[in-house]
Length: 124
Image (cartoon, rainbow, N blue to C red):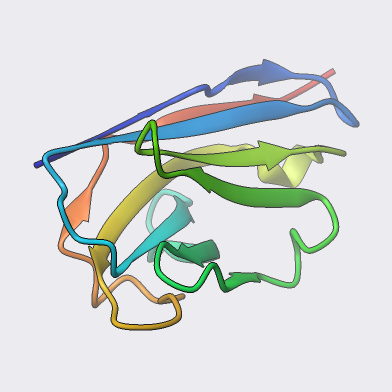
């Protein structure tokens, strides 16, 4: 099984980026997919998650209203659409996937699989 995160790059404040998390080898319909970000020296912070079974989702307060999580089950790709980017969104983003009968996980512990990080830089 593998997760491949992509889509990071440079954006201006107020701009947008869309991160993708491509899954391969996963067969379960009962998974949680999460997006995390990590500042060097600090723990990974959950910013959003979505359930592949019931479609429920959650956002961390700082990104609510600006970021949108979605999943294309046919393509096995999860997305994080990031709008109204701020300087403080500059950080490495990770996607993760793990089993969840219902709902999704906002913390890193339950996730078994992680993609490599993708760097988002917001700068004018």
